[in-house]
Length: 264
Image (cartoon, rainbow, N blue to C red; front, side, top):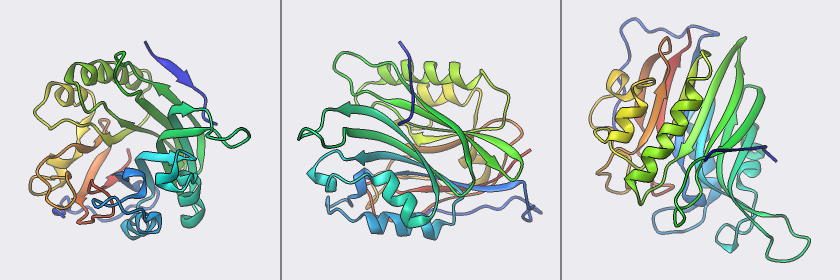
């Protein structure tokens, strides 16, 4: 059952003749930040911020983002900290929402975030189906005004322990995607490789940008020795992928994926 929740290196392959077009080009990034910790589990959110800044991305989807969650991230509001540090707009989707450790403290939350150098007009988070033992996942959706064009930007992080659960989450996401004809980009850690039924189902409506604009295998996990491609940028028909690359960074246990898109 779905629940709508109010918001509180591998390579680059440019398309032929794909010179930048002001007003139509936008660079997106998907990055599972592992609550700001590197593969050794050392917390360094400033390093995460540097990776995002160096990417030059306009709109960024982040997964595994803590908000006053625990000592592992110094109880920080990581989404707001990154937004302030990078001077970006932000919206946050809490998929886990727990009572504070001490009365009067902020609620402890864990979920996804969208950062944007363009204004965010509207945003909401939808909780996705889960089993009784599964972790709650969500789909964070934002309408981003990109130089006069409204881009529908979706960010998710699917269940990692159960393919059946991922398939039910994909079905729910697809139902949401098809409710609008606006240019749509879906990013996230899908915890599934391209040949799996869940990714195949998602790419029936949204195209995988990597085979179009990337080179090589596009492996993203783990960051130190990647052997799997589980992080994606998917786009609706009419959006043209210009370049795609996996950034050779180890600020997290995932490598980020950067894609340049041309909007219709």
